[in-house]
Length: 169
Ligand SMILES: CC(C)(COP(=O)(O)OP(=O)(O)OC[C@H]1O[C@@H](n2cnc3c(N)ncnc32)[C@H](O)[C@@H]1OP(=O)(O)O)[C@@H](O)C(=O)NCCC(=O)NCCS
Image (cartoon, rainbow, N blue to C red; front, side):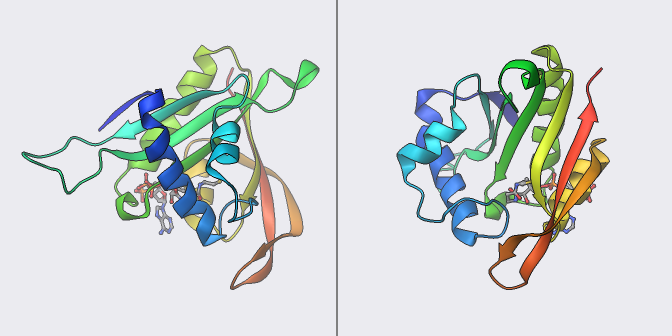
């Protein structure tokens, strides 16, 4: 697997995975009806650095898609808050549980540090998203606050949301 800065050619793959994630309505507070344009405008927002994870394809591996995950890292706030990064991660459902999310997370923290950010903040980690909560904790992110019932899960109803933070210094 290779992680590299996303190019124009990767936009379709990012949209495909993003759409799959958002359509499930379980992990991001984003309308499942979001358009491709709005999704990509969010992903490539001003100040964003976007990356994709590509898997190696086997011989004649046309049946497998090369891009299996992506992340975008950008300032969490403007002005006096711009030294704290925020990031979003997506891994294709068919490729989860194989270490891609972890590799993207580690890459992102290193990249954020390299870009000069002093800290990383995740604003909306839904408590029922066990894979994400566990992975981010493994990567040193701490739950610094919990918003009671801040997300309406399609099956579980109103569930808590964590704000997670770590220094990059
Ligand atoms: C969260 C996400 C990025 C993780 O990606 P992934 O490639 O499946 O993660 P990995 O295979 O690298 O697993 C990393 C760790 O997550 C945890 N994990 C993964 N799947 C899990 C599951 N089903 N239940 C509990 N923990 C799980 C494990 O701790 C795992 O570490 P381990 O392999 O040492 O056991 C992926 O599930 C995803 O894209 N989900 C939808 C979008 C999303 O939730 N983004 C993050 C929003 S905060």
